[in-house]
Image 1 (tube, helix red, strand yellow):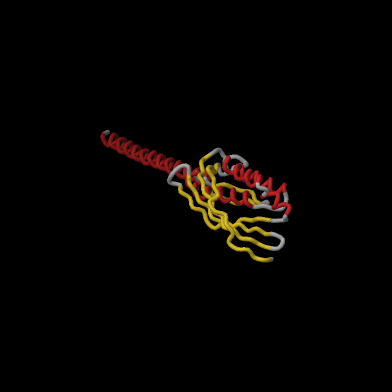
Image 2 (cartoon, helix red, strand yellow):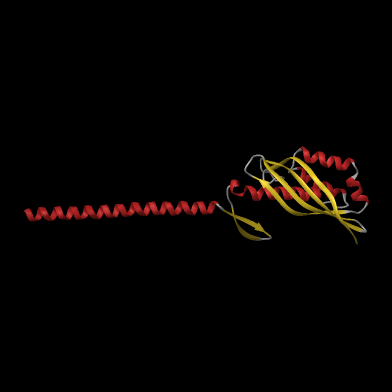
Length: 205
């Protein structure tokens, strides 16, 4: 009788131990699966797929704060390229200037109006002049908001008989705005000023 009782007690303890091991194992497996799922979910959220020329390209996405300086530089570069790329065609000038003015506040519009009033764009068209911009560097300060910047470039002005190279230095501040199709980085240049725009050399063509 006592032997049967002890045998039942031992069996019960063995079953209990087995159940504890099974439950603990299942719990640990569940925790591991949840962890792996969350890691995979985070990984998928930081992946972007871009369709380019019929091909799917994987890109990495991230928080805007992680890319402030990169996006800031590109915003500044795109603004200046659009503003200072000119062809002897009024429609082309208007198209590029319109793109540029979406990226800047009234200070950009004022500079454009001053150039237009002085006949700068009319001379570009009547003289069959084309103008392109080659960026040298951009200095940004992202420690203080709004972000201050300095832009350094050279402007190449091609006339029928000569080519002139000018230095260009501008500065201003950049603040955050909503992202739109016309302003994909979500920045706006303000208090923009042209600090230097001087001829470096002129070459005969």
